[in-house]
Image 1: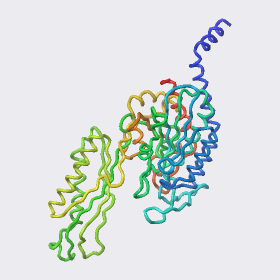
Image 2 (image 1 turned 90 degrees about the vertical axis):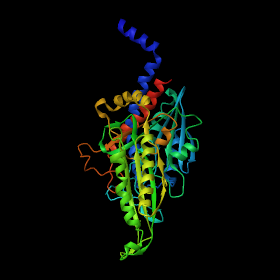
Image 3 (image 1 turned 180 degrees about the vertical axis):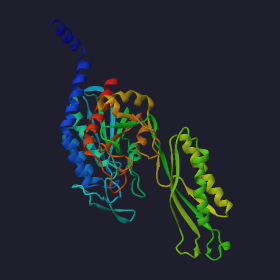
Image 4 (image 1 turned 90 degrees about the horizontal axis):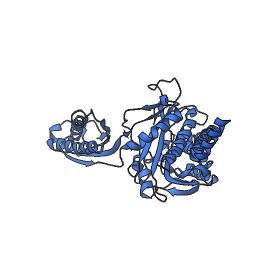
Length: 434
């Protein structure tokens, strides 16, 4: 009885700590309870995907759900985005949580009962539309997080801002969109956001695992358009031409020396890729010009500047050496900063990831050269972005269908952990910064 009395006094004297433990237990149970809802939302979104800046149906479902929870909602942000604000019962920081909503111009090939058969116009042609990168999962998970945290509103030591973002894969040609436009429209203000968290389901990481990296986790990316102007001639008389195809071939090869000879690969990775080269219409006509489209990827600002400078120099000088003229648009239609996880924030929150997923399931990874426009939020406020495993247990990552492909597949048992982690990070950060 004496020890029970002492324990009771300790609990009474530390109401904040006791409440925190209760809230976290409640949070985990709530995530378990809502799992079937999250799966149902995801299946609905998967069956009805929408391209960037056209996520009207998705946004309407999200907005109505947030409103049903008593969350303050704003729609039409950056075209079709939805932002919800949940004010906790106690003072504290403002934590933003982000999910992207758009699908891709990919025709689904699997046989899921909720397979997408949607069609849409993209770049002037009809295409199939599919959630081939898991954004349907992200949206459903964040809807679940909103319901969990709204259910413990009185215990929250701060405010949560739910950001449902359109056009992460890029807006339609000639339009603005995505995280960049959301930031421009003030999504991180009123109330001012202190920190932002986001996740991405990953088809090559096993269910139950979380991967992360402090600092540059995903690459900055600029696309480019290169036009080489020469002199047209008959294919039988190449000496009468300035052949833009030959010049383009030399440029493609020369650009590869940037990574192999200019980039310090012991520090960071980088990529220079030409993905499209178009010129001419006949076998016996040397055309007047050639066009190339490509991308550059980098993991630090200084590397990005160096790579861009070398691209311009190589393209211009190679063309000049052959008597041709080069025009470079870099960036051409898109530019993403490095997805940079704030080092101090990451160090502070990794224990939360380990507590929720289990220490052995939280793994440090090398950076990847894919890009994410979550980086625009991280340019303004400290942020942490991580990967949530979505590959069925026991499957080989080398054979699992990758993102942006017709056979892309996600194991739905991963969603519950996603809800727990985003909810747990929010509550833990508030506890640490109350």
